[in-house]
Image 1 (cartoon, rainbow, N blue to C red):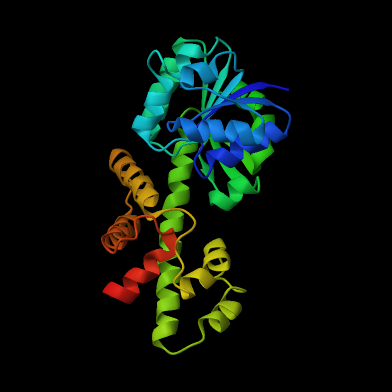
Image 2: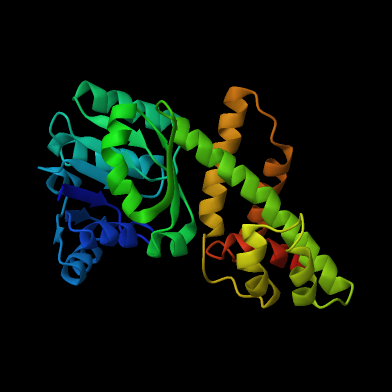
Length: 290
């Protein structure tokens, strides 16, 4: 049994922390809204702390899953931050999708304090977190990854170290770039089927068995056809992620024309009031805006 801390109890972090507690580890949680941390502790049998520092004190491993670069800095740094409570030799594992720049910044700060820092962004959505079926892409030192791996396997179906610090975040960018194009293509295909007077479900039944098949098609086509988008990964968060991708592309010299275009399509969805809709809501832009 390990002494753990988990910082951030959103739709992803809450279930992930729960899997660790159920696996027999002693988990202390922190959430910016303290009542959520207390509710989690009461329901799961763990403990709650009012600060990241308190949650991390005495923990061998600290996991985080927060919102963005600034949120991650706030739970790591300062007198109330997790780093201040962590002992030399402990490991910080960040599951937030953030920039590779902030990852490397915090990696260097942690290293100076004798703390290992692993960037470990996740893919699989809320369902993946709830069912312990996440894919985790990691960057950081091999020895720290090897130590953390048995814990990460508690809520993942695939967990792999890609390279040194920042490699996990770069891989997550590849993931979001690929998803953006796939969702737009699927949206256009279903919109075309509707305009052509075809039975969308019959169309998907056929084309999903060939080269057009994808996770997005299998898991999202029915809700897309039924105009149901109050679930899944929010457009607001996708735009945050795509912004990171586009900024990094500028730094590396990569060309992302489709990603840039789809990012603007998601901006249109936000204008429709769909900031909290699932990313598959791109089809609504086609229906309403053309």
